[in-house]
Amino acid sequence: MVIFTKSLSVFVFSFCLFFLFPDNSLLAQDVKQVAVENQNQDPLSNYLIFRKNKDEVKFNEEHLQLYKDQAILAAENNNPLVASMYAEYYMKYSSEVGFIDSGHFTEFKESAEFAPLFERYSLTFSWLYFFYLFASLIGFFIFILLLLKKQKDRVATFLIGTFVFINAVFIFQIFLFLTNLKFKSPHVLYVSSVTIYLYGPLIYFYFKRITLNYTFKKWDFIHLMPTLLIVIVFAPVFLLPAQEKMNIMLDVGSFDRRPYLLFTVTTKILSLVFYGSLLLRLYIKSKKRIQLFTSVLQTWLRNMVLFVEFYVVCYIVYGVLIMQVHPNYNLLFHLQVAVIAAMVLYMGYNSYLRPNMFTNERKELKISKEKYKKSSLTPNFSEELKEKLLFLMETEKVYRKSTINLDYLAEKLDTTRHNASQVINENFNVSFFELINRYRIEETIEILKNDTEKSMNIIEVAYEVGFNNKVSFNKSFKKHLSQTPSEYIQTLRSL
Image 1 (tube, helix red, strand yellow):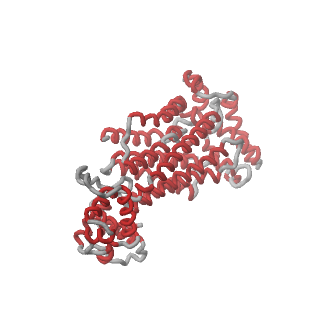
Image 2: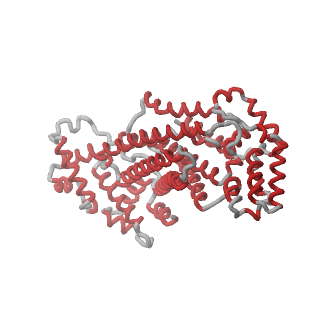
Image 3: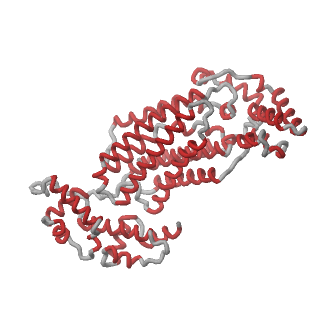
């Protein structure tokens, strides 16, 4: 696992260097050499890439100069219609998208003819785009945080960390495309496409790991086969030179994008529906088991399921529309991206407040199999006592009683001390005092979060929830959150 995480770190660094730095070789004067030569340079790509007829004449140097001159001349003659037409021809076939900001067309920037061109080719920013950038950066930060921090369950941490990372890459690529920074980094083309089949498996197996403590088997790697397939499909595209990728972005040249669009959208919908159904089914089947977790972890798992299922619905609607001819899908496009961004920010918020949020923090209590072998407690009676215990803890809040002990709890359950202990050990997988302190700490967290005036004394809160001394409170708090009470309060006040 250590070797793998180091390798993954190298991959992230390489990703940033390779995909995010601009390719300065894409200058208009190089197009006459690069645009045509690259078509015949890689004969293998001619067989592995969907092609369409290419209008070679428009890439000719003489035509490019003609488009440029005509655009400037029309602008000087105050003819925005003709100027916009030739300007777009020149930008698309020369790849010099900066021509729109050359100063020749500034007076027409708000006109009906040039406004779409500035939106498509000029650097564009909005609060929504900054939100996407912020969400992606938070995602990268969470990924690195999870990668470097020692967690009890490395498998669960790796699954949720990778899930966050591929979502961050997707959001960041969306940011580059919407702001037109994609023209500075043509190698970002289709980068997030190779991870579209990982969304479902990662979140499904993470959930399975948390709820069932699932151990991976060899045949589970079959879930990676679709990803391997799409890597093979897109490999020839990734190997294309930067100029060819610019042509694809500008929708010129011989590359046919339609088959790739239909393939990726259709198969991603199938993947999301399949794993979304598995996740929902697993959540429903595991509800009783989830009730044994802390309320914080229960809320986390429930919200993750809601986020994922809502995203699946949004993408299905968006995917169906995007495969139509010139659909108006702008709102749905931003909706499905915003759902992912919100999910990443939600993960960031929780990882900041609760460093151990992403793993099941239940301590494995080593109970001898012989201990309850001769117990008279039947499964049905055990379930009944568990329900009574949950009522006592969550409704009556008996843990607030500072002198509570196992005898008192057994009396409230109307059973023996031995039965009460067995119910806690077998159903909650913790000892009596661990269960009591867990509920106390959870209520402490809720009280502190709801203290909007930041005026409550932490020791007063500790006594209120049932602790009778500061030492045991601090010890339990740090064990539960990996933070001292003071550190947690500082975290809350910094938000």
